[in-house]
Length: 353
Image (cartoon, rainbow, N blue to C red; front, side):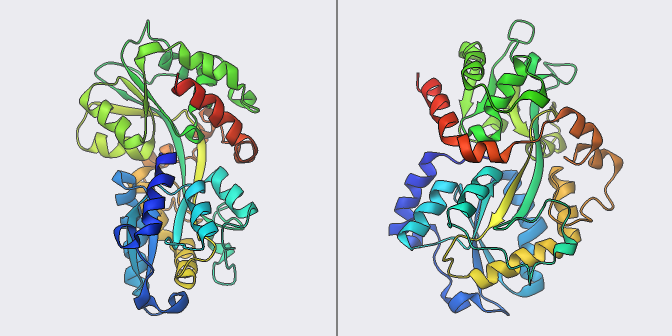
Protein backbone atom coordinates (compact mmCIF):
# COMPACT_ATOMS: atom_id res chain seq x y z
CA UNK A 1 0.00 0.00 0.00
CA UNK A 2 2.80 2.33 0.83
CA UNK A 3 6.54 2.46 0.52
CA UNK A 4 8.81 1.68 3.42
CA UNK A 5 12.38 1.80 2.14
CA UNK A 6 15.79 1.50 3.70
CA UNK A 7 15.92 5.27 3.33
CA UNK A 8 13.33 5.51 6.08
CA UNK A 9 15.69 3.72 8.45
CA UNK A 10 18.53 6.04 7.46
CA UNK A 11 16.30 9.05 8.11
CA UNK A 12 15.35 7.59 11.46
CA UNK A 13 19.00 7.55 12.50
CA UNK A 14 18.96 11.31 12.17
CA UNK A 15 15.66 11.51 14.02
CA UNK A 16 16.95 9.54 16.98
CA UNK A 17 19.83 11.97 17.27
CA UNK A 18 17.63 15.05 16.88
CA UNK A 19 14.15 14.33 18.13
CA UNK A 20 13.02 17.91 17.81
CA UNK A 21 13.09 17.48 14.03
CA UNK A 22 11.07 14.30 13.90
CA UNK A 23 8.77 14.29 16.91
CA UNK A 24 9.50 13.97 20.58
CA UNK A 25 8.22 12.30 23.70
CA UNK A 26 5.14 14.06 24.98
CA UNK A 27 6.12 15.45 28.34
CA UNK A 28 2.72 17.06 28.71
CA UNK A 29 1.20 13.56 28.70
CA UNK A 30 3.03 12.48 31.82
CA UNK A 31 4.71 9.14 32.34
CA UNK A 32 2.95 6.54 30.22
CA UNK A 33 0.45 9.10 28.93
CA UNK A 34 -2.10 8.77 31.73
CA UNK A 35 -5.64 9.66 30.66
CA UNK A 36 -7.69 12.77 30.24
CA UNK A 37 -5.24 14.50 27.92
CA UNK A 38 -1.68 14.33 26.73
CA UNK A 39 -0.83 13.07 23.27
CA UNK A 40 0.47 10.26 21.14
CA UNK A 41 2.88 10.36 18.24
CA UNK A 42 1.79 8.32 15.23
CA UNK A 43 4.12 7.33 12.40
CA UNK A 44 1.98 7.47 9.27
CA UNK A 45 2.31 7.58 5.49
CA UNK A 46 0.77 10.89 4.49
CA UNK A 47 -0.93 11.65 1.20
CA UNK A 48 -4.60 10.89 0.55
CA UNK A 49 -4.35 7.83 2.79
CA UNK A 50 -3.00 9.87 5.68
CA UNK A 51 -5.76 12.45 5.21
CA UNK A 52 -8.33 9.67 5.39
CA UNK A 53 -6.83 8.27 8.59
CA UNK A 54 -6.90 11.71 10.16
CA UNK A 55 -10.58 12.13 9.35
CA UNK A 56 -11.53 8.57 10.26
CA UNK A 57 -9.39 7.86 13.33
CA UNK A 58 -7.22 10.64 14.72
CA UNK A 59 -9.64 13.58 14.85
CA UNK A 60 -12.51 11.53 16.36
CA UNK A 61 -10.11 10.04 18.95
CA UNK A 62 -8.94 13.48 20.03
CA UNK A 63 -12.51 14.79 20.17
CA UNK A 64 -13.63 11.85 22.31
CA UNK A 65 -10.65 11.68 24.69
CA UNK A 66 -8.83 15.00 24.61
CA UNK A 67 -5.63 13.14 23.67
CA UNK A 68 -3.84 14.92 20.86
CA UNK A 69 -2.43 13.00 17.92
CA UNK A 70 0.91 14.14 16.50
CA UNK A 71 1.16 12.76 12.98
CA UNK A 72 4.59 12.13 11.47
CA UNK A 73 4.95 11.20 7.80
CA UNK A 74 7.79 8.92 8.77
CA UNK A 75 7.40 5.83 6.54
CA UNK A 76 7.19 3.37 9.45
CA UNK A 77 8.86 0.05 8.80
CA UNK A 78 10.03 -3.07 10.58
CA UNK A 79 13.63 -1.87 10.48
CA UNK A 80 12.75 1.55 11.86
CA UNK A 81 10.80 0.09 14.78
CA UNK A 82 13.55 -2.42 15.55
CA UNK A 83 16.15 0.34 15.51
CA UNK A 84 14.24 2.49 18.00
CA UNK A 85 13.64 -0.44 20.32
CA UNK A 86 17.26 -1.61 20.11
CA UNK A 87 18.52 1.87 20.99
CA UNK A 88 15.94 2.22 23.76
CA UNK A 89 14.93 5.55 22.27
CA UNK A 90 11.40 4.98 21.02
CA UNK A 91 9.98 8.13 19.43
CA UNK A 92 6.75 6.66 18.05
CA UNK A 93 3.79 5.64 20.19
CA UNK A 94 1.89 4.14 17.25
CA UNK A 95 3.59 2.71 14.16
CA UNK A 96 1.53 1.45 11.24
CA UNK A 97 3.11 -1.72 9.90
CA UNK A 98 2.34 -4.02 6.97
CA UNK A 99 0.94 -7.42 7.89
CA UNK A 100 4.19 -9.41 7.52
CA UNK A 101 6.18 -6.75 9.38
CA UNK A 102 3.69 -6.78 12.24
CA UNK A 103 4.08 -10.55 12.60
CA UNK A 104 7.88 -10.35 12.58
CA UNK A 105 8.08 -7.41 14.99
CA UNK A 106 5.69 -9.12 17.39
CA UNK A 107 7.60 -12.40 17.33
CA UNK A 108 10.97 -10.74 17.99
CA UNK A 109 9.70 -8.68 20.91
CA UNK A 110 9.74 -5.26 19.23
CA UNK A 111 6.07 -4.54 19.96
CA UNK A 112 3.86 -4.18 23.00
CA UNK A 113 1.01 -6.68 23.31
CA UNK A 114 -2.49 -5.34 22.75
CA UNK A 115 -4.34 -4.88 26.05
CA UNK A 116 -7.50 -6.84 25.38
CA UNK A 117 -8.85 -5.80 28.76
CA UNK A 118 -9.33 -2.41 27.12
CA UNK A 119 -9.83 -3.42 23.49
CA UNK A 120 -13.24 -5.06 23.09
CA UNK A 121 -12.80 -8.14 20.94
CA UNK A 122 -16.57 -8.29 20.49
CA UNK A 123 -16.41 -5.02 18.51
CA UNK A 124 -13.77 -6.25 16.08
CA UNK A 125 -14.52 -7.80 12.71
CA UNK A 126 -13.16 -11.30 12.25
CA UNK A 127 -9.38 -11.35 11.89
CA UNK A 128 -8.87 -7.67 12.71
CA UNK A 129 -7.20 -8.07 16.09
CA UNK A 130 -3.70 -9.50 16.53
CA UNK A 131 -1.47 -10.22 19.50
CA UNK A 132 0.49 -7.03 18.86
CA UNK A 133 -1.77 -4.87 16.73
CA UNK A 134 -5.20 -3.80 15.52
CA UNK A 135 -5.97 -3.55 11.81
CA UNK A 136 -5.72 0.02 10.57
CA UNK A 137 -6.96 -0.91 7.13
CA UNK A 138 -7.70 -3.99 5.10
CA UNK A 139 -7.26 -3.01 1.49
CA UNK A 140 -7.26 -4.25 -2.06
CA UNK A 141 -4.44 -3.47 -4.43
CA UNK A 142 -4.77 -3.61 -8.17
CA UNK A 143 -4.22 -1.62 -11.33
CA UNK A 144 -4.90 2.08 -11.67
CA UNK A 145 -5.26 3.03 -15.31
CA UNK A 146 -6.01 5.90 -17.64
CA UNK A 147 -9.50 5.57 -19.11
CA UNK A 148 -8.43 7.74 -22.07
CA UNK A 149 -5.84 5.09 -22.97
CA UNK A 150 -7.56 1.85 -21.92
CA UNK A 151 -11.26 1.36 -22.53
CA UNK A 152 -11.84 -1.55 -20.18
CA UNK A 153 -10.31 -2.70 -16.88
CA UNK A 154 -6.93 -4.33 -17.56
CA UNK A 155 -5.76 -7.70 -16.29
CA UNK A 156 -2.25 -8.43 -15.02
CA UNK A 157 -1.56 -10.08 -18.38
CA UNK A 158 -2.52 -6.76 -20.00
CA UNK A 159 -0.24 -4.91 -17.60
CA UNK A 160 2.74 -6.88 -18.90
CA UNK A 161 1.69 -6.75 -22.58
CA UNK A 162 3.42 -3.66 -23.96
CA UNK A 163 2.58 -4.61 -27.55
CA UNK A 164 -1.19 -4.36 -27.17
CA UNK A 165 -1.10 -1.79 -24.38
CA UNK A 166 1.82 0.59 -24.91
CA UNK A 167 2.97 3.10 -22.35
CA UNK A 168 4.85 3.30 -19.09
CA UNK A 169 3.67 1.32 -16.06
CA UNK A 170 4.84 1.59 -12.49
CA UNK A 171 5.57 -1.03 -9.86
CA UNK A 172 6.64 -0.55 -6.26
CA UNK A 173 10.10 -1.00 -4.84
CA UNK A 174 8.34 -1.96 -1.62
CA UNK A 175 7.73 -5.52 -2.77
CA UNK A 176 5.52 -6.59 0.13
CA UNK A 177 2.72 -4.67 -1.58
CA UNK A 178 2.58 -7.39 -4.23
CA UNK A 179 5.18 -6.48 -6.84
CA UNK A 180 6.40 -10.07 -7.25
CA UNK A 181 2.92 -11.57 -7.01
CA UNK A 182 1.70 -9.35 -9.85
CA UNK A 183 4.58 -10.37 -12.08
CA UNK A 184 3.63 -14.01 -11.53
CA UNK A 185 -0.07 -13.33 -12.16
CA UNK A 186 0.97 -11.55 -15.35
CA UNK A 187 2.92 -14.65 -16.34
CA UNK A 188 -0.14 -16.86 -16.00
CA UNK A 189 0.22 -18.22 -12.47
CA UNK A 190 -3.20 -18.88 -10.92
CA UNK A 191 -3.98 -16.83 -7.81
CA UNK A 192 -4.47 -20.03 -5.84
CA UNK A 193 -0.95 -21.16 -6.73
CA UNK A 194 1.06 -18.03 -5.98
CA UNK A 195 2.81 -19.24 -2.83
CA UNK A 196 5.57 -20.12 -2.38
CA UNK A 197 6.60 -17.37 -4.79
CA UNK A 198 8.80 -18.38 -7.72
CA UNK A 199 11.25 -15.50 -7.40
CA UNK A 200 13.27 -16.24 -10.55
CA UNK A 201 10.12 -16.40 -12.67
CA UNK A 202 8.81 -13.13 -11.24
CA UNK A 203 12.09 -11.33 -11.95
CA UNK A 204 12.18 -12.64 -15.53
CA UNK A 205 8.66 -11.31 -16.12
CA UNK A 206 9.56 -7.85 -14.86
CA UNK A 207 12.70 -7.83 -17.01
CA UNK A 208 10.42 -8.30 -20.02
CA UNK A 209 8.92 -4.84 -19.50
CA UNK A 210 12.26 -3.25 -20.27
CA UNK A 211 12.23 0.55 -20.34
CA UNK A 212 8.43 0.63 -19.98
CA UNK A 213 8.78 -0.31 -16.30
CA UNK A 214 9.16 2.54 -13.82
CA UNK A 215 10.03 1.46 -10.27
CA UNK A 216 8.59 3.95 -7.78
CA UNK A 217 9.40 4.71 -4.17
CA UNK A 218 5.77 5.24 -3.18
CA UNK A 219 2.19 4.95 -4.35
CA UNK A 220 2.00 8.73 -4.19
CA UNK A 221 4.72 8.91 -6.84
CA UNK A 222 2.81 6.39 -8.96
CA UNK A 223 -0.36 8.50 -8.66
CA UNK A 224 1.52 11.55 -9.89
CA UNK A 225 2.70 9.70 -12.99
CA UNK A 226 -0.82 8.43 -13.70
CA UNK A 227 -2.36 11.86 -13.13
CA UNK A 228 0.08 13.53 -15.51
CA UNK A 229 -0.43 10.88 -18.18
CA UNK A 230 3.22 9.82 -18.02
CA UNK A 231 2.07 6.30 -17.06
CA UNK A 232 -0.80 4.37 -18.60
CA UNK A 233 -1.07 1.85 -15.75
CA UNK A 234 0.18 1.72 -12.18
CA UNK A 235 0.31 -0.80 -9.37
CA UNK A 236 -1.74 0.91 -6.67
CA UNK A 237 -4.56 0.63 -4.13
CA UNK A 238 -8.17 1.79 -4.24
CA UNK A 239 -7.57 4.54 -1.68
CA UNK A 240 -5.11 6.21 -4.03
CA UNK A 241 -7.41 6.22 -7.06
CA UNK A 242 -10.69 7.33 -5.45
CA UNK A 243 -9.44 10.89 -4.74
CA UNK A 244 -8.16 11.17 -8.33
CA UNK A 245 -11.53 10.08 -9.73
CA UNK A 246 -13.32 12.48 -7.42
CA UNK A 247 -11.10 15.24 -8.79
CA UNK A 248 -12.36 14.47 -12.29
CA UNK A 249 -9.26 12.83 -13.71
CA UNK A 250 -9.74 10.15 -16.42
CA UNK A 251 -8.66 7.24 -14.22
CA UNK A 252 -10.17 4.08 -12.80
CA UNK A 253 -9.20 1.07 -10.72
CA UNK A 254 -9.25 -2.69 -11.30
CA UNK A 255 -9.38 -4.44 -7.87
CA UNK A 256 -7.38 -7.51 -8.89
CA UNK A 257 -4.31 -7.22 -6.66
CA UNK A 258 -3.61 -8.52 -3.18
CA UNK A 259 -6.09 -8.33 -0.33
CA UNK A 260 -3.88 -7.35 2.58
CA UNK A 261 -3.77 -5.62 5.96
CA UNK A 262 -1.78 -2.99 7.75
CA UNK A 263 -1.94 -2.65 11.52
CA UNK A 264 -1.56 -0.01 14.19
CA UNK A 265 1.11 -1.25 16.60
CA UNK A 266 2.83 0.08 19.73
CA UNK A 267 6.64 -0.15 19.65
CA UNK A 268 8.11 -1.77 22.78
CA UNK A 269 8.97 0.95 25.26
CA UNK A 270 6.77 3.65 23.73
CA UNK A 271 6.76 6.64 26.05
CA UNK A 272 3.00 7.11 25.83
CA UNK A 273 2.00 3.45 25.67
CA UNK A 274 -1.03 3.92 27.94
CA UNK A 275 -2.54 6.52 25.62
CA UNK A 276 -1.61 4.37 22.64
CA UNK A 277 -3.58 1.47 24.13
CA UNK A 278 -6.52 3.85 24.52
CA UNK A 279 -6.21 4.69 20.84
CA UNK A 280 -6.38 1.01 19.86
CA UNK A 281 -9.40 0.51 22.12
CA UNK A 282 -11.13 3.54 20.62
CA UNK A 283 -10.78 2.59 16.96
CA UNK A 284 -11.78 -1.00 17.69
CA UNK A 285 -15.12 0.17 19.14
CA UNK A 286 -15.75 3.13 16.83
CA UNK A 287 -18.06 1.94 14.05
CA UNK A 288 -18.31 5.39 12.48
CA UNK A 289 -14.51 5.54 12.25
CA UNK A 290 -14.36 2.40 10.12
CA UNK A 291 -17.33 3.62 8.07
CA UNK A 292 -15.55 6.90 7.31
CA UNK A 293 -12.40 5.03 6.29
CA UNK A 294 -14.42 2.83 3.95
CA UNK A 295 -16.17 5.79 2.31
CA UNK A 296 -12.94 7.69 1.73
CA UNK A 297 -10.70 4.83 0.59
CA UNK A 298 -12.67 1.59 0.05
CA UNK A 299 -10.50 0.12 2.83
CA UNK A 300 -12.06 -1.81 5.71
CA UNK A 301 -11.31 -0.65 9.23
CA UNK A 302 -11.28 -2.84 12.36
CA UNK A 303 -14.89 -2.45 13.56
CA UNK A 304 -17.34 -5.20 12.68
CA UNK A 305 -19.98 -2.66 11.62
CA UNK A 306 -17.64 -0.75 9.34
CA UNK A 307 -19.68 -1.36 6.17
CA UNK A 308 -22.99 -0.22 7.63
CA UNK A 309 -24.57 2.64 5.72
CA UNK A 310 -22.33 2.33 2.67
CA UNK A 311 -23.77 2.39 -0.83
CA UNK A 312 -23.74 -0.74 -2.96
CA UNK A 313 -21.02 0.81 -5.13
CA UNK A 314 -18.85 1.54 -2.09
CA UNK A 315 -19.31 -1.96 -0.68
CA UNK A 316 -18.37 -3.47 -4.06
CA UNK A 317 -14.81 -2.14 -3.74
CA UNK A 318 -14.19 -3.33 -0.19
CA UNK A 319 -11.84 -6.31 0.26
CA UNK A 320 -14.79 -8.14 1.84
CA UNK A 321 -16.81 -7.91 -1.40
CA UNK A 322 -17.47 -11.35 -2.93
CA UNK A 323 -16.51 -9.96 -6.35
CA UNK A 324 -13.19 -8.67 -5.04
CA UNK A 325 -12.50 -11.90 -3.17
CA UNK A 326 -13.09 -13.86 -6.38
CA UNK A 327 -10.49 -11.78 -8.24
CA UNK A 328 -7.95 -10.76 -5.63
CA UNK A 329 -5.70 -13.26 -3.81
CA UNK A 330 -5.03 -12.89 -0.10
CA UNK A 331 -1.48 -12.02 0.85
CA UNK A 332 0.35 -14.82 2.66
CA UNK A 333 1.74 -12.86 5.61
CA UNK A 334 3.45 -15.91 7.06
CA UNK A 335 5.34 -16.62 3.84
CA UNK A 336 6.52 -13.02 3.70
CA UNK A 337 7.50 -13.01 7.35
CA UNK A 338 9.70 -16.08 6.78
CA UNK A 339 11.01 -15.30 3.26
CA UNK A 340 10.95 -11.53 2.96
CA UNK A 341 14.72 -11.07 3.18
CA UNK A 342 15.36 -13.61 0.41
CA UNK A 343 12.69 -12.04 -1.80
CA UNK A 344 14.07 -8.56 -1.20
CA UNK A 345 17.58 -9.64 -2.13
CA UNK A 346 16.35 -11.10 -5.42
CA UNK A 347 14.40 -7.95 -6.24
CA UNK A 348 17.25 -5.61 -5.26
CA UNK A 349 19.61 -7.44 -7.62
CA UNK A 350 17.10 -6.81 -10.43
CA UNK A 351 16.34 -3.19 -9.47
CA UNK A 352 20.03 -2.26 -9.20
CA UNK A 353 21.08 -3.96 -12.43
